[in-house]
Length: 605
Image (cartoon, rainbow, N blue to C red; front, side):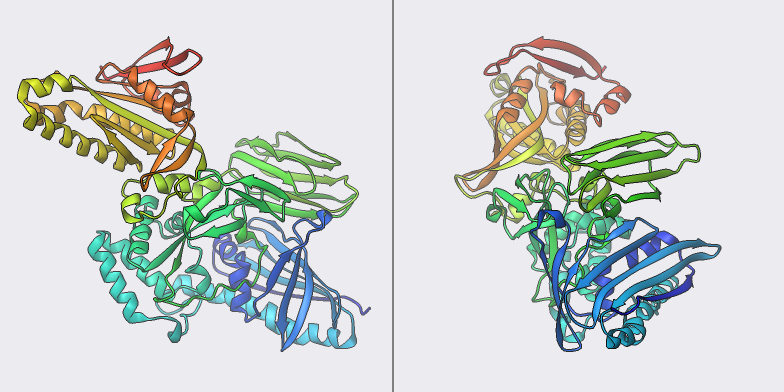
């Protein structure tokens, strides 16, 4: 076997390191932009090779097969990947990028280590591979610099080929979207994105991720995407992600098409489909508007795992020490070859995280540091390879989860077929449920007559719905004078309840004058629930829904009653402490609930 060929090229780019990292870490887009061919990937089934893929592509007209090892990276600093070939002129190719801070920007180093198998492989490494991979990557970094400095003149990446875009249909459906939804600035951004972005950026779109990139409100952009799907500008789909590695394991156009249980070949685990924990909505440009190629050019790069700040592959007995740049908060450490992940909290002072991968156990301990940095020390004591991942506990921060989207008011009206099939059900790990009712409404009918009383009740439904919608919830159903609404989290449910009660007196006076005999009762609870079909509409059942209804039954009028699950929620507790509500705690038995419940009654002073 010939001697290894080492190649490297550096360039000074006048951009912040994070801007360059975000661009270069998207290796799927990068490989396409440097004119590599699409690759077919299949996970290796050997338990000892977790994170490895069998890959097949074409190069210069010839079929090429190789084993792709897991990428290694430290966010913002470097990434590299090893590819090993069973036959042909090359035995191994290891490529990567390093970023170094510089006085006026960032120094980019693109490098490769190539082990030729033949004389021809040695020549090819120094000519074709160097020119194709390294030089083009550096050229793309320079193009990004020009684009950011003058986006009107320099575009990265280039426009899609004209034959892929039906400009007339894009304009027609964008106009239809503008008529159905009032958000001209966001609709304009979306149209420009669909017209100019790469194929990879108009497939599998995550609205919250794009909103953060564009600096716009997340929920407003999500609503634009939903209405765009209704107009045929976009297609929506549901992605089921592995709870461990966070890669997509299943896609479906409708919720009812999702399997109730999914297997991750990479992690070798099976898990239940859950709208709150493993399902998110994604969007593709409609193929009638633009044909976007969905071929895969790279599968394991850092951009594919945005929550991971580090991924390291260690040989048996190997030790590594790396410096991390992370904000204070919770991190999750896991090793593919060892059991359950371990969570740890990093403080503002930094510290050292020591990770030991041993048979059947992942040991993690830490100590404070003096310079505010995070140092990761990893020791592989396994008889085989160890793949260690450090990730932020924040997948849901960037995901429009199934639980959130399906609870939005108006979602069922836009997409009446986006529910579970009759007789089926799908789990939701956590759902906040709000019930309301009116006290004194029966006497109101007798006092002012059926017509006026009925008009008041209908107006009160609209008043409550407005409060629910403002907090990104949805009204599930109306029952007599009562309302059931759901939210993805308790914080938004509490805010909606507080808004209902704070404005109630003004609302009531506007309809009934000085008659203060009708009061609003509100109850909140959160916990696991099950989505079902109820005559073609989304509905929920389970112990959480039952308890929420019973909690509301303890309200007397003009109050909000909270269960312990809501009162103690870490995002609700600070809001309660800052509010001017009077709080009384009491314990009571609830019909159909075995144990007595501790509840909190809140009233405005």
